Image (cartoon, rainbow, N blue to C red; front, side, top):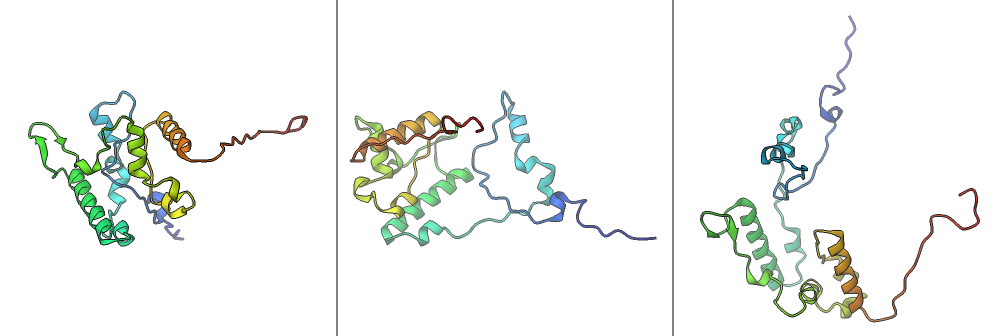
Length: 180
């Protein structure tokens, strides 16, 4: 009798090690018209594959390592600790019956006449002075919930940059090319 070697075909991913990255504190999957049970049931921890997973946690805050000053490191550390408390459900709540938390005032956008200007100034202080600084843009981002919001923020930021605006167009095929 001849024995066939098991190449892991009876295991997920053929027995290969697969690294999945993510944060379980992120928002749940979207299930159109789904009940709470169906949404929770669609998470990775509810999958039949979950028993094959090994959860590993990152333990070094890389942003703290790259902080340019002890003051910015302290600010990053304070925010990191606060956001972990929010994720763990241990942050102080305003009302004991509901999960309502108070966001620290230093994380809120000012109540000026132009909220978008407040947001841009918060995320990109001294924008014009840093236009040539690649690292400045790599370290910052504004997250938006919709493409319309992204377009609004992009247009606003572009309006703050001095110089002549140019629009470049592209074509799917050259005119007169019958074979394209």
